[in-house]
Structures are given as C-alpha cells and as structure tokens.
Length: 163
Ligand SMILES: [Cu+2]
Image (cartoon, rainbow, N blue to C red; front, side, top):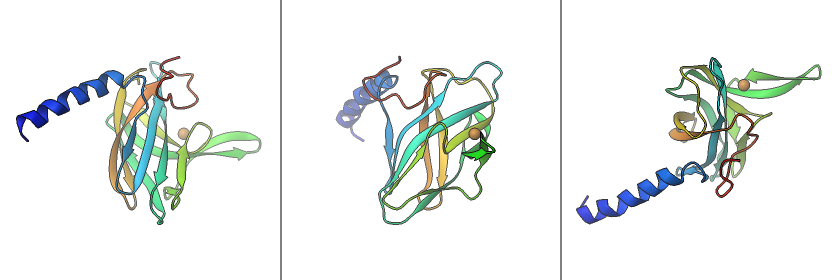
C-alpha cells in the first residue's frame, strides 16, 4: 500500500468511529447482508444478554445461521420464542435458523434472537462488541453488535441517535 492510499483511508476510519454511536451499520458478504446487529445494556450481575439483527440472503439458495461465538460470553445460543399455555417462553433452537433464499431472517425481541450466555462483563450502552456468526454456506462472518439502552425495542437507525 502506498502512502497516498493510506492517507486517504485514515480519515474515513476516524469518521466511522466518531459516527458509530448514532449511525446504523451493516455488513456485506458475497451472499448475505447483515444489518444493524444490536444488543441491550445489561445490569450489573446480569449473566445473559440478547442479540438482534436482520440477515438478508442475496442468493437463490437457502443458508442457515448455525452458531456463534463472542469474547464477551461463555456461550452464544440461538433462541426462539414460543407460546406455551398462554405464556411466551424462549427455547434454544436445534439445527440453526434458516435464512430463506432471496429472503430475510429477522432476529428481534419476541422472536428469533441470539442469547449471550455467561456474560463475562456487563454490556455498556454505546459500546460495540464482536460476534462471529457461523453460517452453513457463507461460513464465518464477524460483526459488531451495538449496545443500546435497556429499553430499546429495535435498532437505532442513522439520524435517530440516542433517545
Ligand atoms: Cu433467549
């Protein structure tokens, strides 16, 4: 890499870091688009946290989110919510979650979500932490989860900022 190239890249990275609290973020692989990975701030002593994002499959072949890892948690699980005698319960998903061909998998509160089990430290509002997602076809994809206020019900998109 020559010097002029390096000089052009640095300001862009700095701008990205400064804008990160308020702006939406997304990731592209050859086959998937992963939008707005987010999580909620945790209370001291809270050992689990939720993770949410939107995964779009750009191909005509189904993919599958099968597992994940993160340095902030002992284990990353995939969960779903089901009605059980009138009560919503979350349950670990067996065999992963499909990302439909030319379709979208939404991980959101009250539905499919990621569960960070055995948090090694509290998740603080405004920070980002890495999660490596394992897909059946797309392989490993590492994304950053943005930690939003504990009251959040959806991703904070660009321009909305912190409420
Ligand atoms: Cu859960």
